[in-house]
Length: 591
Image 1: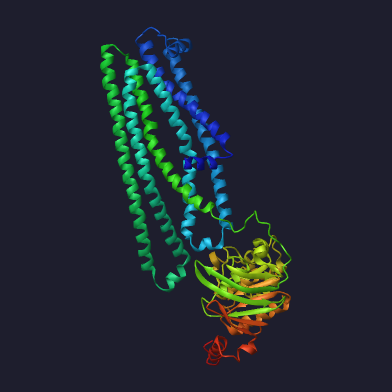
Image 2 (image 1 turned 90 degrees about the vertical axis):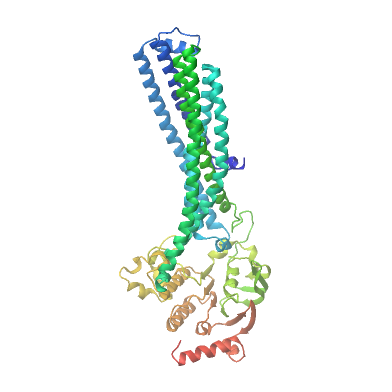
C-alpha cells in the first residue's frame, strides 16, 4: 500500500492524462476481445448456417452484417483500425504522462541535492548518487510509461474474458478459472523473490559506477603511480560481482517463463481436449470451442504478463526507495525559519566554540575576535581544526555550543544563503567547472563583465598567464581544470571569489600551490583593493600570514598561541619551530 501511495504521489498532475490513456486501453481491449465472438459467429451462423440464438451479440451481428462473409470481414477490418488507433493514443498519452513525471522527479532530485546539508555528500558515494539520478529514474520512467497502464489492461482483459467465457459455456469456464489462481500465486511469489535480487543488482551497479567514476577522475594519479593493473583488477572485481548478481536475476526469469508457459499450455490443452470431446457429443458448438481457445490465448498474455508487471514493479519499488532516500533528506535551508539578512560589515567574534564531527571532537573552546578590516592568519598541523573553523563561519556545519557572532548577530540567526553570498571563500581543494576561463571566473555573476573579470584576474596575478593561453579567456580548461597547473587553478579560484565585493574573505590554504613571490604579490593586491574586508588566511607557510594583524595557532582543536608575528617568533612554541624550519629551508634552497 505504501508503494501505491508513492505512485499516486508521483502521478499527481497527470491523473487526467492517465484517465484518457485508460479509456484508450479499454477501447483497444474491447475491440480485441470482440474478434473471437465474431469468429464464432462466422463458424456457427455463416458457415454451418445455424439459426440465430437469443444471444444479444448474435442478434446484433445479424443486424449489422446479416450472414454476409464480406460484411463480417469489413467489420473485422474496422475493429482492427479502431484497435490500432486506441493503442496509438494509449502509447502517446502514457508517454506524455511518464516523461512529464520523470522530468518533475529529476528536477526535484537535482533541487534536493543542491539544498541538502553539506555533510550528506561526505557519507554518499558519487557513483551511487549518479546511479539514483539516472538509472533508477529511468527504471521508474519505464514502469510509469508501460507497466502502469498495462495494469489497467490486465484487469480489464481478465474481467471481460471471464464474463464472456461464463456466458459462452460454464463448464469450460470452470476449467479455465481453475488454472488462473495457480498462475497468479506463482507470479506473486516470483515478485517477492525477484524484488530482493533487484535491490542487490542495483547496489552492485552503483558500486561499479563509483569505481568507474573515481578512476576517470583520478586518471592522473593512476598514471603517475603506474597502477593501471591494480585499477583494472578493482574494476574487474566489481564488474564480476555485478555480473554474478545480474545472472541470478536472469536465472529467475529463465525459471519463470517456462513454468508460466506450462500453466498456459495446460490450460489450453484441457480446453481443447474437453471442448472437442463435448463438441463431438453435441453439447457445445465448434465455434464456441474455437472462441474458447482464442480467449485462453488472450488470457495467457495478461496472466503471464502479470509476472513481468510485478517484477518491473519490484524493480521500480527499489528505485522509488533509493530516490526517496534522497528526497527525504533534511535540506540545508529551512524555509520555515525566519532568519535575518543583516548588512555584513566584517566583525567576527568566537566565544568558547565547540564542534564535533560524528562524535569526534574537532574544536574545543575556541575564542577570538576580529575587527572590521583586520587580517587573521591561522597556522596549525593537519587535523587541528583549521578548515572546520572556517566551515562553521559559512555554516557548512553548525557549532555544537558556544557562540559565533558576525557584527553582533548570532551566526545561527543569519540566513545561510545570505551569509554565503556575503562571504568570499576560497577552499583548500580547488574545483573548476568544465567551462572556459572567463566563465569560471565570472560564474557567480549574472552577467559576464570583461572589465570586472580582468580586474579580478589581475589581483589574483593570473591575467598575464591567461593571455598567454592560445585562446586567452576563452580557453576551455577541461573537467575540474585538468589542463591547468595547481597554481593556475588556485589563482583562477581566487579571482572567482574576489570578483564580488565581499566584506569577509577567507582563504583556506589556497595559496599553497603558488611560489612565495606570487603569494606576496597576491596578498599585496588584495590588501590594496580589499583593504576594508576582514580577511582570514589559513596557511602552512608562515610567509603567507606574516603580515596579518593577528595570528592564531591551532593544535588539537584548541588555540595554543595567539598574537602578532613579532610576538609569536619570540615565544617557544609551534610557530617559532615552524619559522625556524622554513627559514633554514630558504637558506638551503629547499623551500
